[in-house]
Image (cartoon, rainbow, N blue to C red; front, side, top):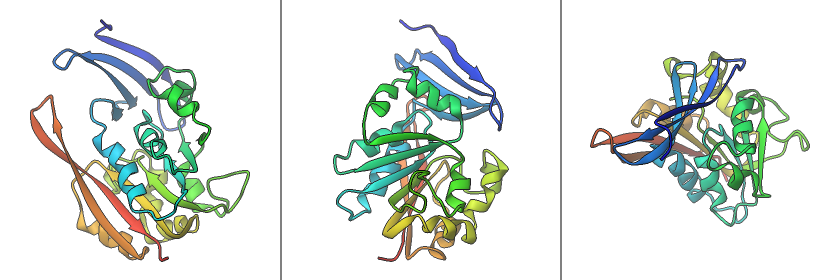
Length: 241
């Protein structure tokens, strides 16, 4: 049996100290991995349904036969794993600001690390997703201006000022910020955004001012610790074909 609690690593970053913890959830008989930024939970392996849904719903909205995909936010790797589970995916670029998170995957400290780093289609890039989205160069330093078929984002808790991990991302959710990001999508490309909150019509309406289509997909799953359902959201939007 694993120890009841271990802090596997702790490192400073430009936006605060990040730590990786593993604890034994006795009620369920499983090891739970958690990433924290300061005192905030970034991700837990106990609830991954909506992170996986971000990939599946985003790819499901695509017609491209061999899509090139960007994921903003690596975390524990569940969105990236779900993208790579689609054999038709040609390439995956995962942009993660926190260098220790990439290190945990590359050194095998996280369970999905070997799978992600061992897939030749997958590239882990340390950088500021929001800065890249706003730039003309985009997400591939070797091919500035490269376009992608899908950009899927799971970084902030929700697209509202009081739910951001860091103030530098606030401009991304404005019409100008979203419009800048669309330069990196092919016609008919899909943008997917994870949110910890229930669907918000205001977010969908904001996306619709920039994209040709926009909609929200609620993702409901059972919380085994509280024995009740919990709903998060995947927002999807598509550029004009």
